[in-house]
Amino acid sequence: MLPLPVTICITAIFVLMLTILSLTVSVRRAQLNVPSGDGDDITLRRRIRAHGNFVENAPLCVLLILAIEAILATSDIIWIVAAILITSRILHAIGTLKRAKRVVAPAMVMQHLTLGICGVWLLIQTFGNLVASSS
Image 1 (cartoon, rainbow, N blue to C red):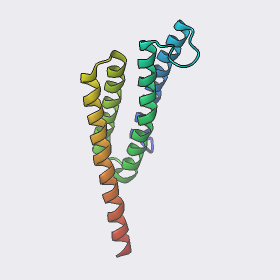
Image 2 (cartoon, rainbow, N blue to C red):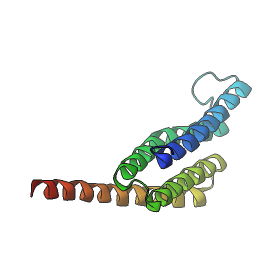
Image 3 (cartoon, rainbow, N blue to C red):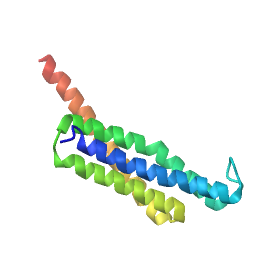
Image 4 (cartoon, one colour):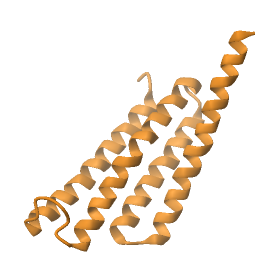
């Protein structure tokens, strides 16, 4: 069995998503013959933002899963958190590419709530372990 199956799974999914988002930018650049910038093309601009937002957020999601998996090991909770983060990243990318604010907003709420709750939980676990080990 893989030592960190959830971390490996979410990393693989995010690698494939990043590849797709990157390719959509590259294809549009080739179509427009725009090697840099957005060429004042709204479609290219949306693709660049979808890619950029993914790059800004996905690594933190993977690190969060890794940290939770290091503490909880085989708990099903890790899969639930990973599924929420994967879903939020997919919805955000689709919403950004299709200019569907009604999809982007819930995706970001899902992601931010999950990151916030899990971040607080990780701090509680860390300080709880520090207190327990100093006693």
